[in-house]
Length: 326
Image 1 (cartoon, rainbow, N blue to C red):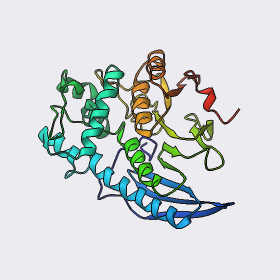
Image 2: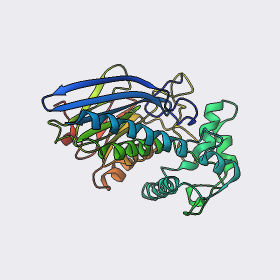
Image 3: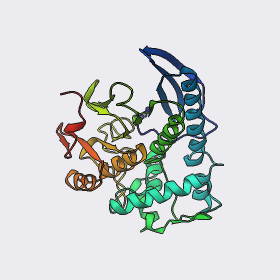
Image 4: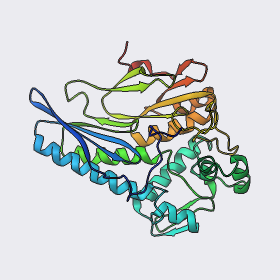
């Protein structure tokens, strides 16, 4: 019951990352050329699309984007025993952490505070209890005690964490953002997509907005299509990675209880960047929809779509302005 999905966990850098080019197309659009490359990274398919008037620069930009994403995957993954997150989780302390890891943990702190703890990377013991099947998530949470992200100490010279951390709820978006940052230096417009986490730029300048489809959790097809010039989109859902037949136990857990939320099947957030969209979609999924809507609405540039288990659709103000399927 476990598949590659939009919330696939980061894999070890020595595993599938950079496993090779799966496909590339060149599409002429008048003076513009689209260069697209898809590779296997982070346990999912990652596609980099570049739009430019100079195809040779696009080729270089795509390669630079993949190189930067591969580098950061090795920084953020918890699955590589030699990686920084795994060493922090093992020892509880890490000296001289990578600046990118420090910056991401500081971003986690801001989202943790703004969501009143709904986004909390210290849920890893509960997640691994689900993954292994050898332990009950409530028992894992009980052993953790009252530890939350408040107990994590972050500085440029040292990290301290009394409870193991997972960055699965934000790292993929951060990696996608890094790919876009590398790509921007070489092309007029581009888009990076990693298992459902999307970041685009230059949409209006490329002749038309990017179109981003929202998957229907109840079957094949899309429930909506968005127009995107510049920004990020991410979805958290219970319909791909789950541990029982009715999908009430899945890979997203509520901090403090160790239970998987069951109100929604997916929450999609649009934000200025993919890491923000990733983190807030994770947080919104574990909140009641009314509370999540208020939290999302309080942040400039954020909108959300909630698809509930009973088939309803709810969205925040501004969502209709993004739709391309009217």
